[in-house]
Length: 109
Image 1 (cartoon, rainbow, N blue to C red):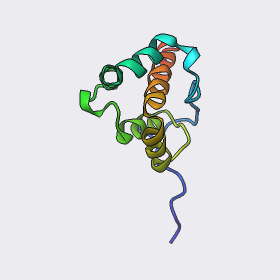
Image 2: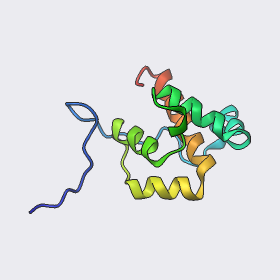
Image 3: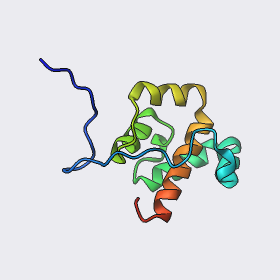
Image 4: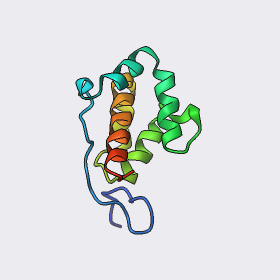
């Protein structure tokens, strides 16, 4: 029996491998997103969920980050997603929103 070493891609053809558009600590890349993430993380979570056509309560979840990561072929694991949200939740939300905004600007969202 062969172990599964990669997560399945999103959709029929699978996603191409890419990476996050910014790192988790690139707050200066978009100060508006970072200010929102630190002073009103629930608002940012709802914006993220709305962007992804999901329930507002799902924006700050491991499942949402994992869904986004697998949809765009971003390497990582569910465990890594959990650690990011457990130890740096605001920075993790900001990273996800910045990535969504950059992909929208490139018409790749």
